[in-house]
Figure (cartoon, rainbow, N blue to C red):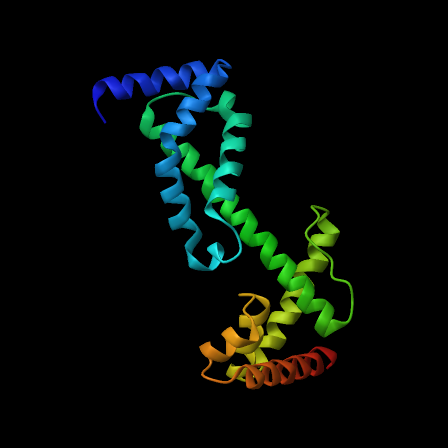
Amino acid sequence: MADAEFAQTITLLHDAKDGDREALAALLERYRPVLTQRIRFMMGPQARRHAETGDFLQGVFLEILHRLGQFEIRDERSFLAWVTQIARNAIRNKANRRFELAFSTLVTTTLGIEPVTRSGNPADMAVFDEQQQQLVECIEKLEHEHQEAILLRHVEDLSFAEIGERMHRSENAAQLLHARALSRLSALVGD
């Protein structure tokens, strides 16, 4: 980046931090292409199946708006590293929420109870961890193809057609394999 552009970026950073909304808009527009590219890369293909890059970008922009006062302006590189970390955290949090939802569905399906989610309450978190550990141990006891069918369906959220394609089976065969896997998993959990 040329010295004049770098100086302008630093000026925009200072002005935005001081509450200048136009400076913030100009700053975000300046970094939109590089942030979009970084978010797309960090998301990976699996996350892009469940969310749009633009959705994360909007969330990152909102987070920047809320937290810009906390940012210590050193240089442009530190700003880019800071906003990249905000994006990374947003992607990780979304993935964690997806996992907890998939896990909740699997616990409900196999254990027949309403699972406890990570509410921040230490007792709830301990129960959640215990349920998760019990389920993981039972999944590990399954035959490999049963493990794969459950993980593809409940963690990767694939359709039965996609599972069949991935496992070199028909859609119906994938659906039957998944049903047998859940049945076996329920029996293991019951033991």
